[in-house]
Every structure is written in C-alpha cells, then in structure tokens.
View 1 (cartoon, rainbow, N blue to C red):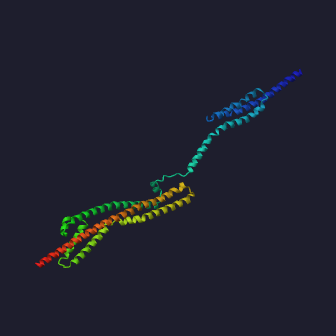
View 2 (cartoon, rainbow, N blue to C red; view 1 turned 60 degrees about the horizontal axis):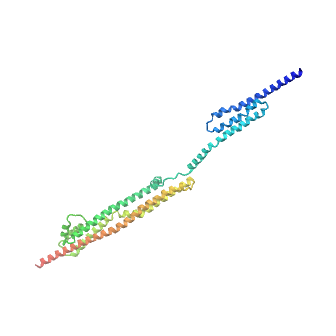
View 3 (cartoon, helix red, strand yellow; view 1 turned 45 degrees about the vertical axis):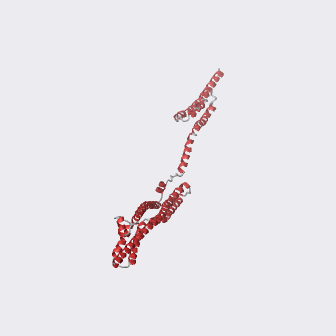
Length: 342
C-alpha cells in the first residue's frame, strides 16, 4: 500500500515537473512567433526572406510533445536570429545599385562641363577688354569693305568719264571747241579747260606766250594735286587698318591669356577642359585682327594700282588742255601778225 502510494506520488511529481518544464518552452516558442507580423509589414521586395520562418518555427512543434526538448527550445531563438539575419541578407544587394548610381553621378558632377566653342559663344564668354577689341576689329573690317565698295565705284565712274571726255576733245582744235564738245558736264577735264580759258582771258594783251603757258601749267598742277587728294580719300584708313589690326588683336590675345592664367591660379587646376576655353577666346581676338588686316592690305595695294592708272589719265587731260591753249595762243599771235602785215 505504501509502495503504491509512493509510486502514485512519484508519478504526480514527474507529471508536475513535466508540465512545469513544458510551460517555459511554449512561452519561448511564442516569442519567436511575435516578429512574424513585423516581417509581414515589410515590403514585398524580398519574398525569399519570409520563407525561412516556417523552418525556424517548425522544430518547436515536436518540442511540445516531448518533455526532453527543452535544450533545442533554448536554441531556437539563436536559430531564429540567424534566420532573421539570413532573411535580411538577400535584401542587402538591392541598395548596391544606389551607390553605383551615386558614384557615377558624382563622377559626372566633378567632371568639367565642356562648352561649345563656337565664335559667338567665345565672344560672349570673353572679358570686357577682349570684347571691346573684337568689336573694334569687326568695325574696322566693316570700314575696310565699305571703303572697297565705295572707292571701286568712284574710281570706275571717274575713269570712265575721263576716258569719254578725252575721246570727245581729241579732235577739237581750240579750247572753245573742246568746251562745246563737252557741254556742261562736270569733271576733271572741264576744269582744265576752264582754267586755261581763264588764264588766256586774264593774260590778254600780253605778248609773252611763255608766261601764259607757265601760269596755266601752275593752275593745272593745282587741279591735279586736288584730284589726287580727292581720289586717295579712304586709302589712308585702309593703310592704318592693315598696319595696326594685327597688333590690336595681339593686345586682346595677351589680355585674354593673362586672365586665363589668373583663372587657372584661382581654380588650382591645369585641366585642359578648364584652360582651353579662355585661351580660345583670347586667340579669337588675333584671328579677328588678321581678318581685318589682310583684306585691308590687299585692297590698299589694289587701289594704289588703280589710282595710279587714273592719275595717268588726269595727266593726259592736263596735257590735252595745255596743247589746246598753246594752239589758241599761236593762232592768236598769227592773226595779229597777219593783221599787222596787212
């Protein structure tokens, strides 16, 4: 009887111990299940991360049936922790794309932005002094071509009129006949004829023909010099532009390169992409200076030849007027001698 009651009390004690040991295991199994909603609240970016959770919880089920399972139950949190960390591990490669993009963006931002090096952009980006030089050289080039067009028209018209007038007076026998052939036209040859007639009229009654011719030649020389001054108007401007434009452009280049070196010292870089635009803007001034100077020199030499040809025509007109005056004087003296003989 005592042995039976002892066995019953021992069985009751073992049962109580088993229930007491089983209650912590269930509590420990309930704790790993709590993070499951947090995992469920995560975005669906890592579906593979939620899959290992049942494997971590599954070993806890047989631990309830067998009292000898407390030791694995204690290790379940540790197993759950690596499982949780393993669930986060696949999500780590996703942010790797962001650093790559950020690095590329950083490289792009640090790389110097290349400017479009067109003449207009270089002009707008240049220094104020360099801009003033470029504008002055552009204006000088405009003046050069304006003088070229104006002088070409002027010399062409003047040469044509003078050749036509010389043809008309070639068969004239006296100053009065030459004036009638030319009519009321204005020009260099009518000026010579008018000067010769004026001198002959003012020297009427004088017996010295040499004095009349000398005074007439002096009047002709004044007319020739006045025509030379008139026909050379604008050529001095061409000579000035042709001789000074390269040096003005060089001044703009030196100023621009000086500012470029100052910018290099401030930026503390010798990158060609940073240095090249400023130097290109400075060299543009020299290019514009050459563009203004080369045509000016060529046009000046062209007008020198054309003007020389025109002045030769003027000399022919002066000689024609002097010959007509000499004929009139000889004719007048011949008439006087014939009257005196009668």
